[in-house]
Image (cartoon, rainbow, N blue to C red):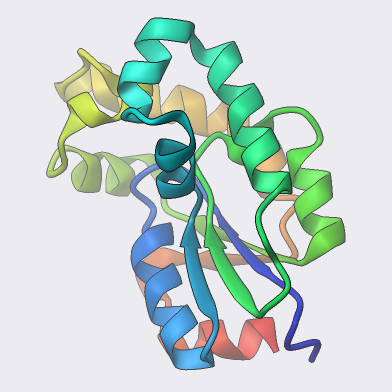
Length: 170
């Protein structure tokens, strides 16, 4: 295994990328990076505010630039945003640069997880609830699946064990 190769965690919002990323980084003695946190630091405001002020296209440009400028000189686990793999050449770049792991969850499981979070902090879901939210998740997931499935590894979050995840990236 190339211990220096970064691991990029991808998947829909609420799929557990950040939670699993922290666990994986700790278990494998890697640095953990949450791409959204790096972006917030770079733009100096919450992502939802940036979306409102400048629009999604401007955000996606910042996201792609930030992703490709991450310092990857040490072993790192990177939790990406849900849309990161779906814009520009981000997915191809992540696959060329490191190992990608797609955290799959079915739409209903994503909905169950997302309704327990602060929806307002997620610009792509702002103003949605109930069946409308589930329909939006189902639609967006269908649009993004072709990107997500380009990952080196696909894991079902519902049955995932940390040791299995560690074994996958080795």
